[in-house]
Length: 126
Image (cartoon, rainbow, N blue to C red):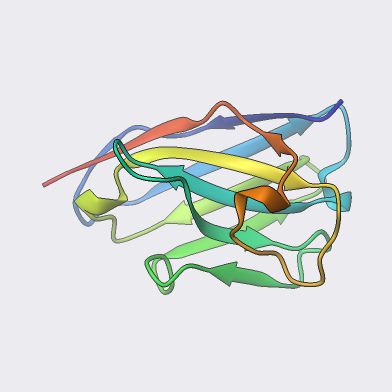
């Protein structure tokens, strides 16, 4: 059983930075594609970034490109999302997810992912 636990969320001012983490247990993350998603009140869950199982390929939503960086540390069995230049519209619960079926390139469909963490709240104030 793969378990994912997000951490590192909090309150930050507009323009600030946060790094959130997705720590895995029960299995090695290096055999999964990993995605970061977020969900704001009244909105559907949307993908923001993902990384393939070997860490060589990453993808970013338009809203994240140039501001967010996804990375993985297989030794720590953890995936990170570094978020810079945060905006109020980034406010959401952020979830990490793992995909058992390995597409060549990770994507932003929630149906692609099989395991989900409980989420961590990120709030960006003006």
